[in-house]
Image (tube, rainbow, N blue to C red; front, side, top):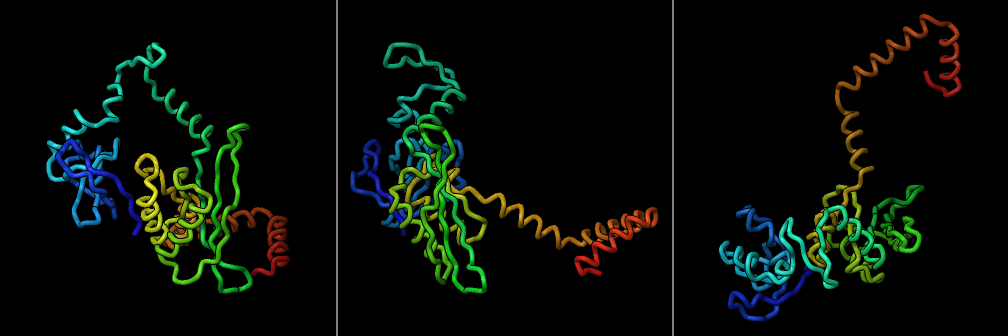
Length: 273
């Protein structure tokens, strides 16, 4: 199982022994507190709260301890101005926080540092009835000099049975490490198959993407639209739509013999009744 490691916080009297995260758990506990923490399952079987800002580990049982960390001890938040508060920059000028300005500068930083790579991947079958399946991985990024969207196929692998979460994870993990993208992936576009979703969750734990992985799994829009259409074709109402269309054609043919002849010729050319 993929793991991450860190050290426990010293502000709660814990030891500095290395902690291995084996899973990030969902929690319904007080959201005002836990919005700042991940509930982590540790390799020794215990559960720890990990600060989303400074990655410090704390005991998960006391909300008061967690709140105290956020308000008084978190080193990252200590250096962050409160909403609406101005800060003095190192050059001695006033810095006024603005959401759009920060987003733009962040985008420029990501592009200039070439740290923003998006991957798209899909599994498809070979033509002509061949039994093999293949996995294709394409990388997308913005060129820092021209600001043009770039893409390149970085993997084209045979994907043998079984098509499990672990098998999919192993291929993607190897591709990511081959191109040294461990700290550069912003998102991975997948369709909605259950093994794809599970594999992405495993990759998320392994690489700890930005924004706590909120945008890590980008679900394929084309697959969603196709699923909607397929479900829609099964709805009984589709027959009523077809009947209405037939009646419309009959009205058109009744009003114009020329149109009927043209339609009959078209059906004949296509060998349709």
